[in-house]
Every structure is written in C-alpha cells, then in structure tokens.
Image 1 (cartoon, rainbow, N blue to C red):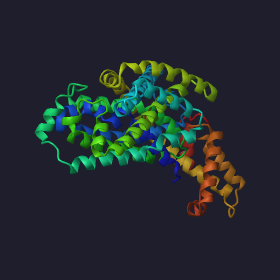
Image 2 (spheres, helix red, strand yellow):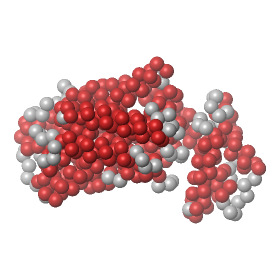
Image 3 (spheres, one colour):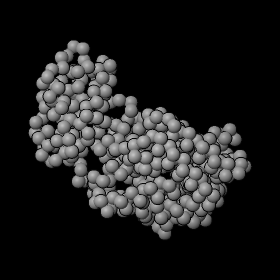
Image 4 (tube, rainbow, N blue to C red):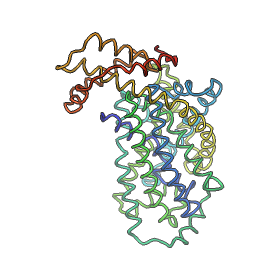
Length: 440
C-alpha cells in the first residue's frame, strides 16, 4: 500500500468536515435540538459515512474519474444524469457560499471583524489554491484533518471532566433550538444526504486519483471512520454545554473559550481552515465540471463561481444552514438512490477490475526489477490486461508502470511482487472483453 490513500482519506475528511460541523451549528440544528436522543442519530450518521466513503472512492477509482459527471454517465440514465448534474452543481455552489458565510461568522464572533472581511479572505484563499497542482491541493485539503480531530477531542474531554447541567436540564435547553426538520429520522437521512451531495463530487475526483481500487476503498473506510469519530466527539461536547451555547452562530467556539483564550484563538483558526477546505472542494469540483480538462479554463471558472458565491454569502450563516441545507439534503436523497443502485450493479465489475489492475501492476514490476527479465510474453500480458480494463488502456499501463517502479524502490514490497508467478487469468480477461469494456 502506498501513502497516497492516506492523503486521500484525510482530504476526504476535510471535504465533509466543513463550517457547520466544525462550528457545531449543523449538529445543533439537525440532532441536538431533539435532546440526548439526537446522539443516536449521530451514531447512525457515522456508520453511514463509513459505508459511503468506501463506495464513493471505489467508484471514482474504478472509472478514474476527473469529475462527477464521468461516473454518473456510466451508472445513470442520460436524462437522470443531467438532472443529477444540475443538482450537484447547484448544491456545491450553494454549500460553497454557506462556507464563505461561515468564515465571516467565525472571525466576527472571535475577533469582532466584519463578516464580509472573513468571507473575502476565505474566497481569496480558495482562488489562490487553484493555482497549485492536484497532489499539492490534496495535501492542503487534508493537512488540517488531524488538527481538528485533536481540537474536538480537547473540547469533548473538557466537557466531560467539568461540571455540567443534568440531562433533564440539557434536554430542556436543547428544545430552544429550532430543529432543521420535524423528527430525528428525517434529520439523520437528510443530513447524510447533505454529506453525500457535498462530498460526492470531490470523493469521485479523489478516488479517480488512485489507481489501485483496494487503496481507494481503504481510503474511504479510514476517512469515514475519522468522520464518525469527529461527529461523536463534537456532538458530546455540544450536548454537555447546550444550555449556554445554543444561541450562538458558532457554538463550538464558545466552548473553546471556556477551555482557554489561547485555545479559542487556535480553534478559530482551525474552523476557518476547515471552512476554507470545504469551500475550496465545493467550488473546485464545480469549476472542474465545466473546465473541459483545461487548467486555465478551470481557474477562470473558479474565480467566477467564487465571486458569485461571495456575493450570495451575505444572507448570513445561521439562516443559510437552517433554510438551504434541508432543501439540498432532500435533493441528495434521490442522489443516494442512484448511487446505491449503480454500486450494486457495478460491484462485481469493480472487483474484477481490482483484480485486473493488481495483475497488471505485478507484470509491470518485472519491467523495473533489476533481477527479473521483462520478456515479450510479459509485454503481451500487460497489453492484454490493459485492453480488458474499463478505463483507457494506454493511461492505465503508464500509471501501473509508475506504481510498479515505486514498488521496486521499496525492497519489502518488491520482494513479494518479484517472487510472484503471474500467469494471466484468461477467464478474467475474456469476461472483461465479452462484457464490452471500452478498450476491448
């Protein structure tokens, strides 16, 4: 296993853990408004995110997707695909300007800065990041994930060890919060769909950057588990302090102030960083959808959508979450159905492709290992496997060769790969060819 899947996992967490979650406003309106029972919804949400992360990144890797439309054109009817595309673009843009509003609310509550200033700073950072290459972008998105996990863990531990009101008093205080939806079941389903809508486009892109499907699956699992842990810790901290933080735009920041002023200062910066992470992912995936593969065009489109999003962010953070998020969540439920059906239909093909790529990489190891001969027979095997793949064969061979070279550079892995006898699984290849794979 390479380290790339860990970068993808942390980047995926950075995409999902945005302004509302890090600030506590999402969890307050969607779950804790129902009192202690809301924690059950949080647990269910964590499990669903583990499943979704694995499925989304696997599909992205399977199709080597550059944007979300490349996946949905394979798993959805053309008319439905166009509708999904509109929903995702609308949702990504909407959630993007909610993030910019969150950046303004965060800095206003901590430093007293005008909300427009925090939003403008975040918007500028989003645009500047687009001028990095994708590997650096993925590292930037994921770099703050460990930091927020530690920060939220501190909030939870502090809340557990300090005195707090009784459960009855906390539940009574929680009722002051206007719930986003009429009951906990709807809230859990809606918020999970919201996570899917906000994360699916970038999850496909992250998965598409990983050749080995097993690594993409592992990245999704790890990312989902980390999200579940963050959700749980954040929810516990918020609930134990709900009697005094329920009316704040950024309730988690109010808990951080109780810990220590210096910690509150640091937590403000962490929230801002996560808002920036999510805002960038949303605007970037939207711009990438319309870039046509051109980096220059991507940057121009990104600047335009960020400018429009900044203008829309003046409606206010708390109000935007309460009004826009439930709408986006219900749109996401339809997306969940399409994704589930597509995954069930493609599951066996994904496993077959995973096996095929594994075999191709092992064949290519022979090309780079000094103590092994890369024969004409091996070259034919590589071509045959690449032709049977669901993705472009030339690109697949090039990427497989690059991974094989990395494996050879790692003595421990190279030994295992180099010793393997690698006859082509003719049944696997013929099945792929007969199923009408694009490169057959």
